[in-house]
Image (cartoon, rainbow, N blue to C red; front, side):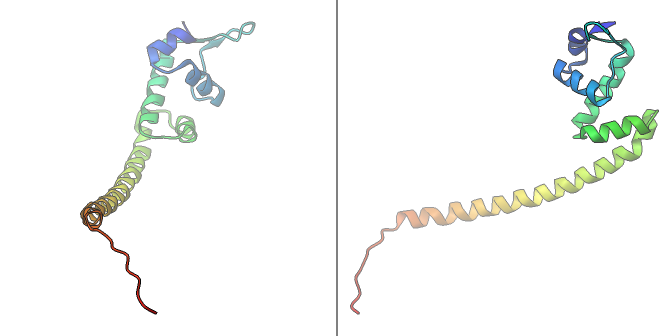
Length: 129
């Protein structure tokens, strides 16, 4: 059994994250001391921690992870979700690429026109009525 500090180092999850995952029911420690409230994790908890870390890296929300862990007993059951997540990410990438190109165009216009305006002198004239 690993204390929360030891498990934090092994899993590369912060103690704060482990407490949050416990509170959310995502990664429940193998044992919790009734008197002290200390959490103890087993070797099998490392696999679940690694899966949660992978899903967080894939930009999954805690709610999505909670749903997946509740519905999927085997890794193969994650495939439909992962395919859908990939499809949504690719769509988001296309949208962000379009935004980036629009910004790039504005930057090019700005850098082309501004130097010409700055180099010109402006003379104020008063016109007769």
